[in-house]
Amino acid sequence: MKFGLKYKPYRRRFTKPLKSPSGLWKYREGIIIQLTDPNGRRGYGEIAPLEWFGTESIAEAIKLLDSFSGNIDANAISAGWGTYPCSTFGLRAAIGDFQQKKERKFETVILVGSTTEGLKRLEEGIKHLKLKLTREAKEIELEGIKELVSLGAKARLDPNGGLSMSEFMWWMEALEELQGIEFLEQPLNVGLEREMIAVSQNFKTTIALDESIGSIKDILELEKSGFKGLYVAKPSTMGDLDRVGELDDDILKRMVYSTVLESSIGIEASLGAIPAICDHKVGFGTSDFFERDGMYCHGEGCELYYGRMTEAEKEEIWTRARWK
Image (cartoon, rainbow, N blue to C red; front, side):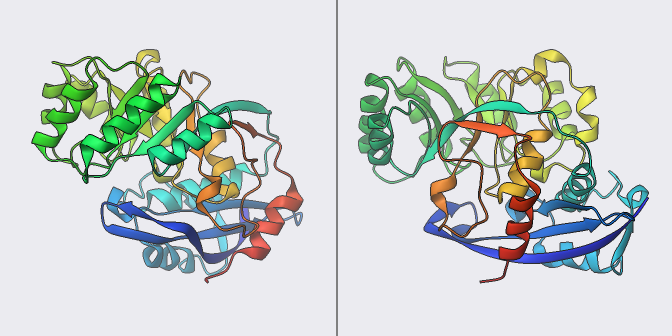
C-alpha cells in the first residue's frame, strides 16, 4: 500500500540542559511523520535520533524522507536500512498506527537529576528512581544515594559511560553491600564491553548495558561474549526490532525498555514495540524534563498506558511540532 508522506522537524527545549556523552544537551530534536492512506486516514510516527548511539542525524533522516517525494510504499521500509535505524522505526510506527491497538499498562521509574530531587520524589510517594551519576564529588553523591535507599528508594544509577576504570571499580566496591540498587547502567564507554563483563563477575551489583546496544544484533553478539546482566533497549533507536523473535525468554526477561526523550507519539510507538515478556519497570518517566509545549500526553505519574492516545492528541502534537 502507498501512503502520502509529510513530516515536520521539531526542536524542544529541556527545562535544564542534560549531560550527554557529546556534552551539554539543551534541545531534543526530532521529526514527526504523518502518513495518509488512500481513504484519507492518518497515521503518525516519530524519528528521534541519538547520534552518540550511532544513529543517523536529523539532516540524514530528512534527506531520506525527501527521497520519497511525498509518497512511500510500505514495502520500501527495510530493516536493511542499517544506517537509518530511527527512520526505520518511525516509518514503521506510522504504518502500524493505522492498526487497532490493545490497551496495555506499564509501570515506569522516574528520572531525577540529583539525589536532592530524588528525596523530593520520595516525599511524593515515588520510590523507583533513575539517577544520572556525575564524575564530581562522588563521595557526596554516594552519601545521597545511601540516604535515598535507606528511606526505601529503588535506584538505577547511570553514568552514561562516563567513568574511568578506577572510578568504575570505586563505585562497584561502594555499592557492594548497599541494598536498593537495581543496577549500574553503562559504567564504561562503548567498546569496553569485555572489561565491564569481567569486572561485573566479581561483584553483586548488576550491570546494565545501554549505549553498547543499538540493535538486536548487538544483543546477540554480547550474549556470545558471556554477558549475563541487563540490556537497556531504546525501541526508537533500534531499526531491527523485527528480529526480537530471535531472543529467547531468558534474554527477554533481562531487557529494560527506555525512552530517548521523544514526544508522546514516539513514546506510544515505543510502548507498542515492547514484547509481552517484560519483567522490569520501563524507563519513560521524563515528562518534567521539558517545558509544557503540548507534545506530551502520557500522564505525570508512575503508570503509563499504551493504546489510550487519541487521534486528537496525535494531531495536536503534529500541529505543535516546530523548530524553536
